[in-house]
Length: 148
Image 1 (cartoon, rainbow, N blue to C red):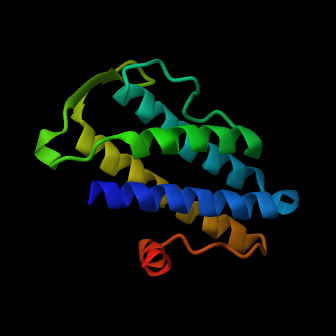
Image 2 (image 1 turned 135 degrees about the vertical axis):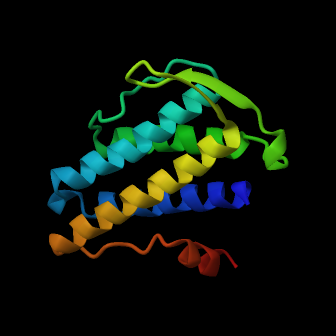
């Protein structure tokens, strides 16, 4: 399931990015800020999984081209993770951006990343709709229907 959620997450983020680029002249700052946050958070979690220092901060606002590059890099990294049985995924030790120390399984981190993206994509869809931009349907069931 984690592998399928990874594919869904990568598809949904790419699909939304395409819509944001197509509507870039009429986007609100909040759409760009929230999408930057999705990409930054995913980049940070991938960095933690790989034991490296993240190159971005959580609420750093990027232009859409930077988002595209960061999204491709982090999506590729997520896709390259081997998804064995959940019980076999390792525990990652890391510090948060506030300096708190945690130990979390890769499975829980991945579920968080995928759920986090879904949450903020919904916020972006609402913002788009409020500003008369047609939001894209990034629901999981839409992914399943299109990929079947």
